[in-house]
Image (cartoon, rainbow, N blue to C red; front, side, top):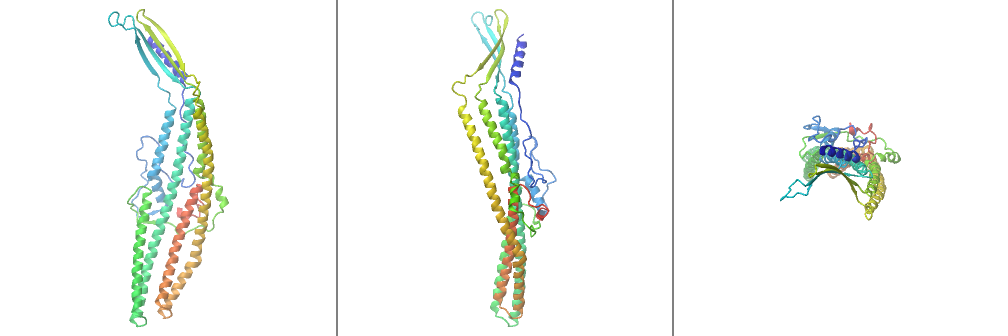
Length: 455
């Protein structure tokens, strides 16, 4: 009889308590930028290592796409965000669970000297907290939205890793090109020194010029070693994007000197700002803040504690069903402060959305300015200045061999030509880095067909 009543009480309490649980996967649709490249994402709690075997290193030369694949799968920061998404999913699950019931056993009237348990009264009581006002459902909704926000944070970090890797790759390309230029400078200095030595032997110029040529050759070799060290430093920085302190690759390949023929207008780029996760996330953020206000309002309604059990009278052998309810009287605390705080947080989120839009728009304007300046500079240097500097050097070099110019004229023309070459490399690096910075802001590539760096 006692078990029967206890089971009935338990069933009634569970029916009153109801059920709830999280919904949806929580991950937003990836932005177009880098969407075709697999990134690290934990799919289950038992995953310890989610990097596929297809992503392998040990290559001597890597491409832009190789670098992105390594970074998006092995970047420690991105992996941490992925685990945070899983943790937020678990928290949402926890918020949907029922409170545990309580089982209480009582014995009253025990007399150790005379009757013992003969006149005692015993009771078995099962109690359950029943949340009213939809608290558990609303609490689960808030936790689910927080989980979705973690998904947006992951997407923002994915794009950050994409851009940081792309810019680091550009730095390696530029440093590699600088090493090549420095090697060319050394080779040219050697040829000039040979030419000067022949003129000194012929008695046409002073031996002082041969000494100057030797100094210039030594300086060129120093520049070459410096360029090599800068290349090694940039290579290490790129390797750090996928957590490799000693990357095995020794070179990179990419269309460094390829740039867009014409830039898209700024207004057309503004139309894609909605793809930026730093803006897109705020719709979910505001929905979460509104759900938090709703949750705090529901907290003003007191919960119900229901209990059911059986009391047994040992003296008569009779059983009695016990049922009770208890709830707080909301006379003083109606959760007024928490409701007001949640409303203020909602207002704050709306202002933060406006601030985020302003920051992104300003960033787009700055990135576009840098893009147009570096684009124009790279085009002008390649089309006009660099050919002119090369022609000037060749003319002075040939004239020096004919005795028309002095060595200082050759040295000046040589330095000017390599300074222009170095400036061209610098402008190309600035251009490509500005491209990826702008693409991060709009969440997509500017022009997939023309951006050959992505092949």
